[in-house]
Image (tube, rainbow, N blue to C red; front, side, top):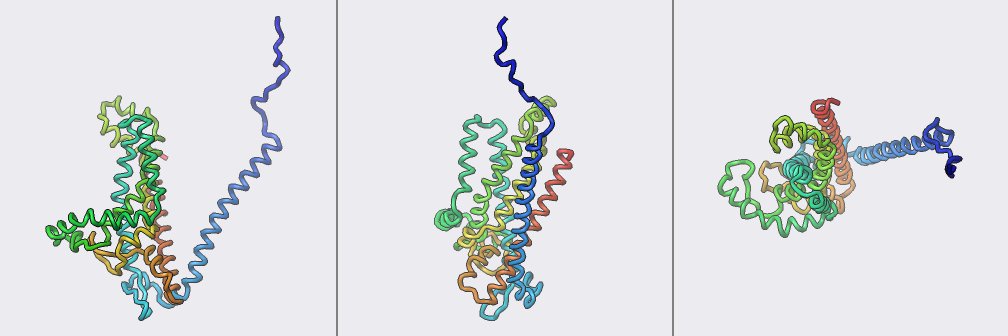
Length: 322
């Protein structure tokens, strides 16, 4: 009987952790905790620096700065209510358009409408939109999008001008082209994360829905969509955060007009574009006011993310039982 040449080899299948394992675990934990602490310290440092430089403006203008509508450098009067309005209005419009399209694309790519290889190609194409520089989107909006939508916008104004959303004509840059370009810019974020959310749902969930007699669209809309809702909400929150902070494309497309209007075709302004367009020629007091505006933008972004996390947890408890 032939002897086994590997009989002397002892394979360690399991056993208690060694001192080296404990050391490696402690080292990894220390690195992770250190990285988290660095991030928190960096955020705190940014807030501190913004607050320090904005403090003179906070003392001089007070809370009236947040609800005043005048930005007059000559008279040293500063208020950012129109910019807050423009930031939220443009971001919500972009989220409405880009969110619906992004979730629809995710459904199209994951729910067996396409062959697996073809869907990967389409997903790559959508994700490549995120690599296009912001200024290129701005130029595309000026030279392609605005001329393209101007006839329809002016027709809506002539026909339905009594309705606040179409109360002005589109003569050039305005809220509608800015929101449309912003929707395209957040589309890759929403679509990519939504695709991952749908892929996390076990296929047996859909099979169980089919076993209960649902149609294809009933299974998608009443089973798959609610089950993946926490991931989809995360995508929407991240997309909204991207829209709030977008600068260059909006500075080129929104019109930089210090006014509050419901019209989709009226020019407006946002906090980010105000900062980008005003800083190069700002005097000392205006710089302090701009820092105050930056602090307000940071606060809005923080509030939006906290609300988004709360909504995600509520959706997770409702649809996933966690």
